Length: 450
Image (cartoon, rainbow, N blue to C red; front, side):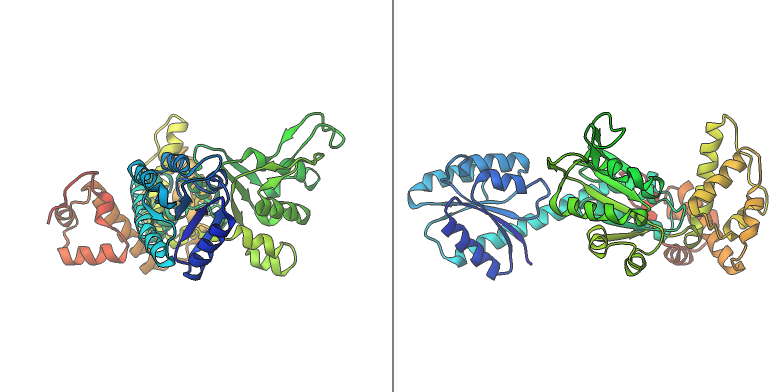
């Protein structure tokens, strides 16, 4: 499909004709008999255009135009007018309409206007997305630490997906930070002002799962002494995070699927449907497709939840981040306990880099806290998993040295060359191999030197 179009006209014959013309040309079209119907379908991120008749009962085309432009000044609205309504169409252009088409008109005239309007809308949406990603870049780097290429890719993917409304499945090893990633997807989205509701599906007894998820009315079951708002309803307008979603009972999987399809729910003990608007982010330990094949997870729900997938890299695949993370978590722990973290002893860094970290970031946090409290050294924590080759340890150590130098010199390549005693070409090759970008270290607003 080449674009989305909403057609608003109270005359069914005209709506159907316009819809047929546009669909034959590859556009995705929704038709509405009133302005009110159209307004229910459109938000500031709507990626298409609106075609509206001027004269309609109730809210007319000019009033609809005002409401749409109040929602988004850059939304292209094409007005359709009768022969005697040209002065009204001119007024619509002054109010901000993109174009007006006078009846009767040819399909070619309409298609030309729609294509131009969609090109403009696409450019506006892309520019907004780039500005949003630029604005959020520093913030997300403070939430998801790391200078490795896998972490750069993860942050970029999160910012790209945060601007959409699709449901997302997060994959990652135990302790890799799935809830932190889910939180970032919420915090950097348009839903940030609404609730982020997290539920660990493995921690809820099956006997109370339905009440926990959907809520209940007073007297719905023995012990239900008052009305309870469920997690889904509480997340209305925001994000519902279902951790260990593979533990969701089959009976509740059916009901969750219905909520996602109908965008409504019913509390336990009630027949009243409640409208809900939410995005669902899920996380799973096993491969959910394996759960589907074994009959433990519904295939239709899997495809509803897995519109997009985010894979969190394990710590062993981004070893150059380990020293930075360890230092950060040790510093945080020392502040919490009102003491200074002891310095790393010779050999500690190599052992940190050589450990496999099966518990990922969670294990690293524990090791950093024990180090801050003087309960153990990084070497004691890490020596069990020393399976990394010498070459791999040296690569990770080199990446960390480059990162430290770039950080200290604020991305000034000449200063880094002097500090590390490296020629420009060698430094460039090493930075490229380790996925280090000079721009990431430059102060905001600084001018690059040649």
